[in-house]
Every structure is written in structure tokens, then in C-alpha cells.
Length: 155
Image 1 (cartoon, rainbow, N blue to C red):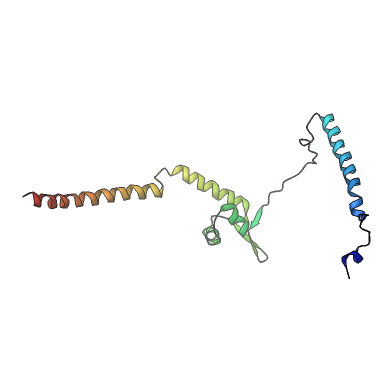
Image 2: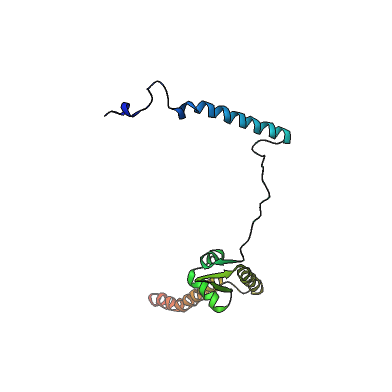
């Protein structure tokens, strides 16, 4: 059985879907010219013209724990630690634990307020200062021994 026997059309006539391609272009051209006409009436470029009906964004009051941890940028273990410490509020809805979004916002606000109050050096700067101090102490401790070795050959 050859492929030519399976085709319902001859090789000279294209299938119906290919025959309608030209028609599709004509319809598309008509609609795009309508877009230009509407854009001209509105005084804008056709790609800048937006037709939208009012959209309402509904913010959730509570989210699943995975979404809450994504919002906070923390791990699962740290998120449940926050719940255990009472830092964020949560409740069970059936078997699913949900975290109150307002408590996530309040937690972030508390962290920002604490950060503004605490003007001490960050941990890395403290560690760097301590490391520099230890290095200076070691250098001071080894300096007299090096001078002693240098003085022996001079005698």
C-alpha cells in the first residue's frame, strides 16, 4: 500500500485546509485594517490600543504553608518554627494548614522595625574585625621570636 492511495485528494488539488489559507489571510487583513481604523479614531498606534474590562485583583486572606514560605523566602522547617513561636498565625482548614497573610505582613514589619532599631555591626563585619584583631595578635606574638633568630647569627 503506498501513501498516494491514502490521500483523498489528487496531487494537484490541495486539501480543504490548505485551500482556506488564502481566505484566512484575507480575513486577518480585514481585521488588522479594522484595528488600524479603530486606532486612528482613538489617535493611537494599533499595538498601544488596549481594550479591557475592569479587572479586580483579589488578595487571599490565608494561603497554604508552601505559598507562605515562598512569600517569606524561608524553608519548610523555619516556617513551622515561626508558627510554633507564634511569629505568624495559622489555622487548620480540614487537613490543610493555612497561614494568615496579614500575619506574614506583620512579621515582616516587625523584622524591618527591629532592623532599624539595631544599629550594631552585622555578623560578617564583627567576624572580620575579630579576625583582623587575632591576626594582629599572632603577628605581634611571632615578631619577637623572629627578631631573636635574626640576632643570633649577628653575634
